[in-house]
Image: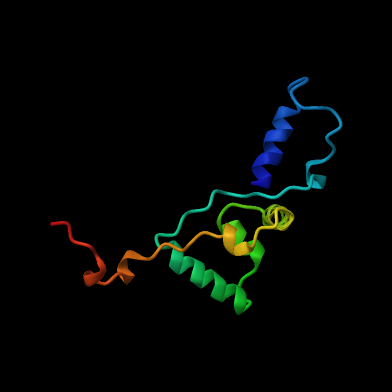
Length: 116
């Protein structure tokens, strides 16, 4: 992508007043590329697998957030702000966490109410 952007900037620089002046060389711009992530077909299984990968140090937070098309540093800073606000408001973490939804495959047939 850097090659394509660099070529585009070379062309764009030929058009007067299209780009701001003083941008400096493209190679010196701090940047990262992120693409939209894809939702897993079974989010509960993926979450468990992710926790296992993180616990066994076979992945990193940067890799896991990148799979979702997110910047890990931005997400951690956001989470820190959320935790600080939870504390400031005197809420317990349990009060703001969501109750896990039971996987329909884990429900036994005799647990499903039958409408008569």
